[in-house]
Length: 203
Image (cartoon, rainbow, N blue to C red; front, side):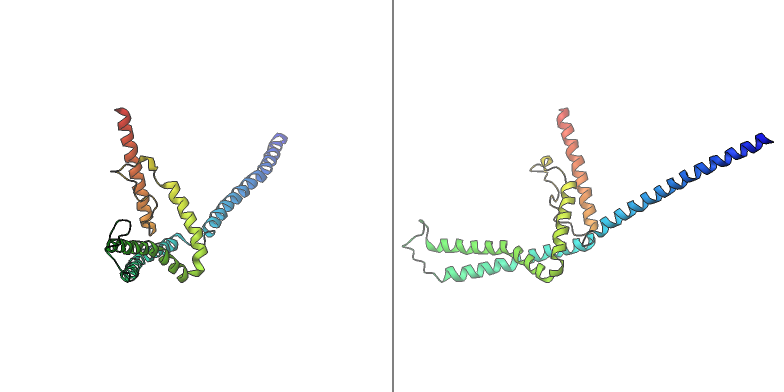
């Protein structure tokens, strides 16, 4: 009987010794889970804009830059034509050995090209004026987006004249779905390039 009581007492002591360990492990697991969840939430909330919102604004900015290229080119053509058309063109006095009429025509086309190149800059400035409160957020998201693209795009050393890299700067990405398509294109190009390199090594 005394042996039975001794066994019960030993078992009870062992159970009490294990209980704090189990409780400590449970608390440690809960604290780790909570810390991981809090870390992921803080990472998600650290971004000034959500990715869908940023991609929409980025696409809108790109569209404005493209649209403003047209009036920029037209404005350059009209302005250059008005200026050089008002100048007298004396065929007896060539400019660098070329008739003035051809020089003025070339200069007018040059003004059109400059207007076309200046159009995207004007469009970007117009976008910033329309979204003044989001300019800083866009700058932060542009940097994060470039980091994503840089880390996931294919190595440019794989490309060739007949097989260029697909959308190397991610300019065609305008939504989450197009971003996923871009990732698939990069993966497919990488597999194709590596397969071609293996064939060349075999030869």
